[in-house]
Length: 112
Image 1: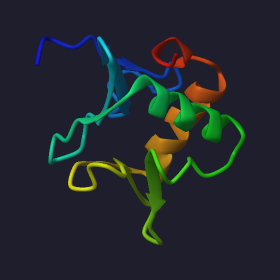
Image 2 (image 1 turned 45 degrees about the vertical axis):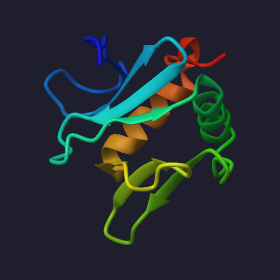
Image 3 (image 1 turned 45 degrees about the horizontal axis):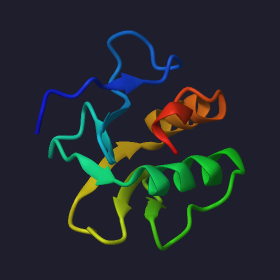
Image 4 (image 1 turned 60 degrees about the vertical axis):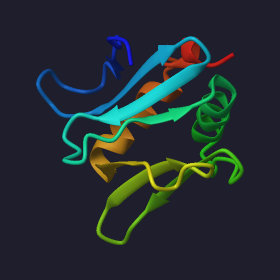
């Protein structure tokens, strides 16, 4: 994979680990800088757009594209339903920071 230009939400403080987003032609990539597995989730721009739309509407993403699961312990796992073995793992605080950026339209340019 080529060198990716990662973007994080402006709500993420300098030096904090956060959810990051990058793009390559035809794909959007998500990772979490403190995820020990260093997983990179790759989805289509359309699937990422569906995630953004759902997060802005404060609803669940369509189960056919991207799944976001919150555990009772505050762990958030994000994966594409077509690739459940690859999941980005974060905590609820970092996820909330990402969602604040989504609602501020900071990642809209990654969606079609």
